Image (cartoon, rainbow, N blue to C red; front, side):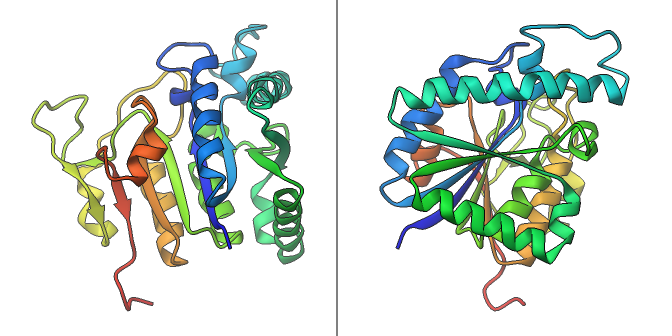
Amino acid sequence: MKKKLIIKIGTSTLTAGTNRISFAVIESLARQILVLRESYEVVIVSSGAIATARQFVEINGYQRNVDSKQAMAAIGQTKLMELYDTIFSTFGLNIAQILLTYRDFENPVANENTRNTIKRLWQAGYIPIVNENDTVSIEEILLGDNDKLSALVAVITSADLLLLVSDIDGIFDRNPHLHADARLISEVTDLESIRSYIEEKESTLGTGGMSSKVHAAEICMQKGVEMWIVNGQRANYIIRAMNGEIPCTRFRRKAGKS
């Protein structure tokens, strides 16, 4: 039986440090999934709808106003899925879109329906691509960039691993963008031990700072789901992280801890 892998890819990774979606980043993801699918059933939790919309339209005030951000997300979501579909199909990969809100996870029936839909898509050979339904829910627009959403998806699917793909190798004892001598924390079993290390970096695109990633780890660790933070700016970051070839931070619940 294949293991279950959730891959959350954030805006900062999808844009490769620019203000536009990078086709090369999505292509790299597709190439890696082609290898991973031999052993894993995969769900992608993808941010980037607003960044995609910026390639087609500018709406005044979208940086400040929630409704403008929601309008940008509505425009960008279809374009983003078109990009995924176009690029993934060249590798023979089929995708399907799932839009969720946080109310869905509070409802046992909705949870079961979502779980069954994902399972059926896997059986049909499709890769579910999940995003928040930003036109009716605003939590990840304002804070999180789908970190929490990906953790909740990992929990309801009983995933073996959640990979948060970011623009950094993981958790450091100091912010490496601000401190050259920062040291990577390779494994975390006690979240309280690292909370004092969280020091955010300003971003004009993504909203998912390290605080939201630690919160996602908390959700996963409570339910026994392992979570890693990997650097999407490294080549073949998923495959190499799984082979232990690049640094990352792994969040694991202590053995025997309930």
